[in-house]
Amino acid sequence: FETVTAQLNGTEDKLETETGRFNASQAELDTVRGHLETATAEWNSTEEQLQTVRGQFNRSEDLLETCSSQLNKTEDKLETSSVQLNSTQEQLETVRGELRNALY
Image (cartoon, rainbow, N blue to C red; front, side):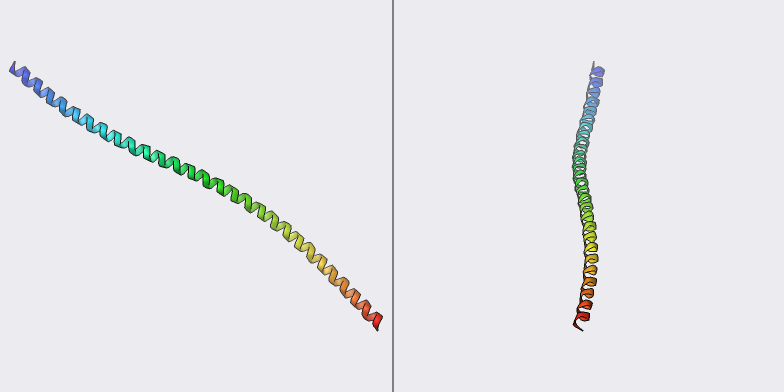
C-alpha cells in the first residue's frame, strides 16, 4: 500500500510538473498570438497607408498629365502668338516703308 501511495504521489508530482509546463507553454503561445495579432494589425495599417499613397500618387500622375497637356497648349498658343507678332511687325515695317516713300 505504501509503495502504491508513493507511486501515486510521484505520479501526482509529475502531473503537477507537466501541468506547470503546459501552462507555461500556453502562456508563451498566448504571448506569441498577441505579438502576431499586433504584427497583423501593423501590417494591415501599412497596407492601408500604402493604398492611400498609391491613390495620391495616381492623382499626382493625373494632375501632372493635365499640367503637361495645358503646358503644351500654352506653348502652341505662344507659338501662334509669336507668328502673329512677326507678321504684325512685318506689316508695320511695310507700312513704315510706304509712309517714308509717301513722305519723300
